[in-house]
Image 1: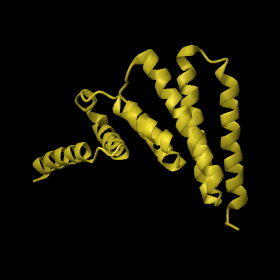
Image 2: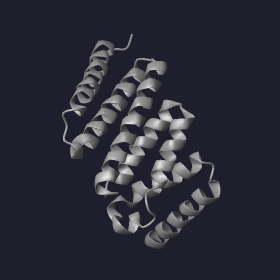
Image 3: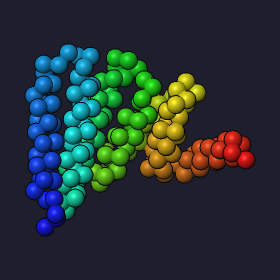
Image 4: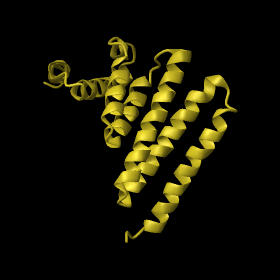
Length: 167
């Protein structure tokens, strides 16, 4: 038994309770706020899954990572339909990718990679403070889709610029 096992179980229950509250609130949310509910549900699902891993329950953890990816995807779809791509989009897509990777579901993983690659290549120029998130998500997505040559080009481009700055 883990030293904090009972406390960890309470955290799992708390996060799963938050997901249930989020689901119940979806119907009452203003349309422009639904994506925020999905984001919160994605975050709570991810947190519960991490705690389930700590408890050694890989099956339930993967189930909740899968749900987390689904909720993050719904958040992205909702945001894009209202606002287009915002400055923190790359970070949200990386949360989707992380959940998808840990879900163990290849279909969800490919979908997450394709969703991430929908971010326009002008993003890092427009949102310089989020460029690292953009390139990370892009490289991971290309690797998932077995586009190793394209991923390698981005890595070389980044290395070139880093060397130029620091040498």
